[in-house]
Amino acid sequence: MKDTFGRTINYLRISVTDRCNLRCRYCMPASGVKLLRHEDILSFEEIAEVTRAAAGMGVTKVRITGGEPLVRHGIIQLVEALAQIEGILDLAMTTNATLLPKYAQALADAGLHRVNISLDTIDPAGYKHLTRGGDLQAALAGIEAAQRAGLTPIKLNCVTDEDGGPGEALIEFGRARGIEVRAIRRMDFGIGSFSVVEGGSGGDCPRCNRLRLSSDGRVRPCLFSDISFSVRELGLAEALGRAVLNKPQAGGPCEHNWMHGIGG
Image (tube, rainbow, N blue to C red; front, side, top):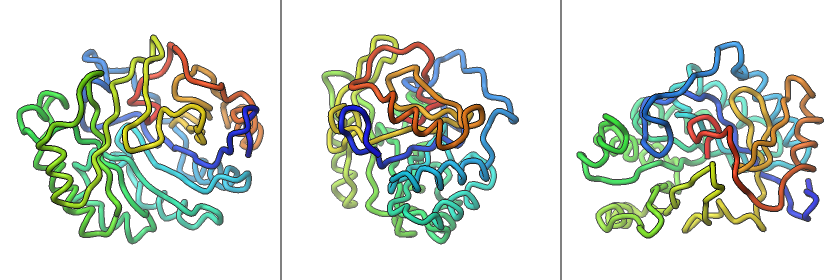
């Protein structure tokens, strides 16, 4: 698929839930959020149907996100279904890793290729503060479980302030384990503030190859845009096609996005 600016669109990020077992300060407001109703969330069958349609239109890369995707009941069955779709060459997941000790091997057996892990610090007190109560040891155990299961190469996503970078302790932690640490500058949807991910491709508008499917079934052509198209209202091909045709040249301010619900 080509958008109107000549970019090849071959990457679909799928948010399977707006729920998470952490409450990271940069991702979710302190007051919490109004969660989607159960009936508004796409079923696994619907997600698989969208992915098949996207694969038929040229998508080869899929990433499962959230919220925290591993809190979605039955997530192993979804991974297995997506892994069997013809044309999908790269199937990955972004997770906070705290549930990977339970699920890593099953995910690998189901066909997941690799994981990106959100980890901003390896200081226990700092982690607890940033996640509003999270347990660092659970995340570290999850990283070990992912390595044992072969969900590699693992990449650590570290959200940083505008002028900062990953702490030396985190960089050394990754280096000692052969894990790449990537810096993601803190974003502001309201003013459209974002930057290119250090060590990744996110935020690089001229090269963007992504569509996003939210857990309530809306295809979004850009993280920093309020434009979206419902697969339930328009049908699969129409929603995907409109998203490609309406993909903006670059991101900008938007009013209705929170990271917990769109998956980054």
